[in-house]
Length: 250
Image (cartoon, rainbow, N blue to C red; front, side):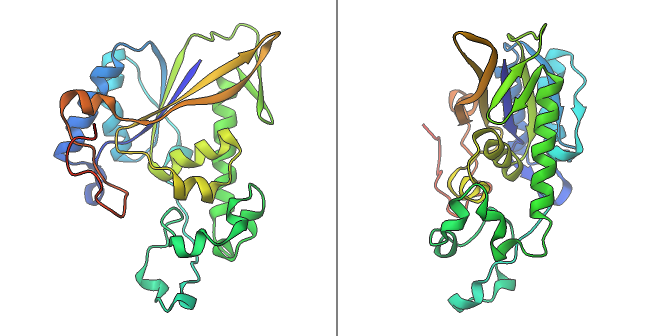
């Protein structure tokens, strides 16, 4: 089976919708996915994700299932930037927008367990939200026939392993899913990976003979925007601090 983690197209945050470019991205994505045998579509309740999913849902005649836990990560952090002579109130408290001068020197943020003990998260909802996302992912895979046992998954009898399932969500949330799937420390994943708007990250269920009723989840593509490149549509830098894309990505 394949699970497609799709970030919404270029957003119009003020109206929780898409920009003109974002609607083009969603249409181009829908065309590319029209040839993929998608069995189910799950979507965040936020408008920018809902609008992105519409062309794909229409081409497959699927009514998407809205899952509240797929909304963008609804928690902030308490960055101790004062020691750098910076007024923390003037910088983002977004969990995946930390100053590299802080996170690159904090070894706990690379640890899959110890990161939760960092003062960044004291008194915040980050731990609780992460637990909800982890539980949501495990429930979603269970619904589709895969029962999580640590980093292994038991495959339920009768599971159609040829299917593809699509999740339309967000940057921070999508990276939190990658953390859950890989077991990597969430702050490290947040700070070192980027998912462009309308990009597709493909998770593949891989079996190792002779264990035909168990699999791992293996990521075989991160942030793919080939649907944009083929159409000559520039890749958006939405969510980045530097505008590294000045034209076509390829």
